Length: 194
Image 1: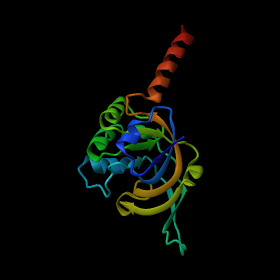
Image 2: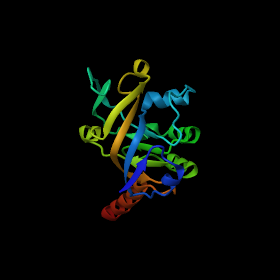
Image 3: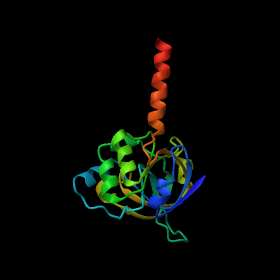
Image 4: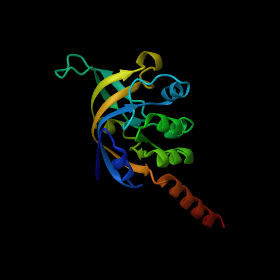
């Protein structure tokens, strides 16, 4: 297992290979459809994503009252959402923000893979279907942005994570596990129907 600590440096990201298991630690932000559309339309971003992580996630977050640590929020479910919806936006987001980690499920297209290769980013596959378990790695919620504008599921949440485990699905060298599986599956399918 490879430990990644925020800020996620270009050197650390370039050292990763598709298939590596990583432990993400530190600050990450969520962003889904409305967030990406806002960005594409030229809207200002609430934080500096350089050397950061963008998590495709619509978490279930509840308010906390009288927390001894002063916490205002607690994540009860924080699983990844399907990333392909963000394919039209992600290459420009990677280029313009300097984000290093894109976290989601299901992979992304060849244009995103090319942007990862060119700018030094990776796509991390988080475990889908285990949102309550994933939430255990989210230790604090320091901030939330666009809550009133986008709603809770589409807001940009800032999380502090500890030992958030993922697999490198697309690396910065042009390798995609998703593309490899698709190619192998097609070859096997062609054998079976021949």
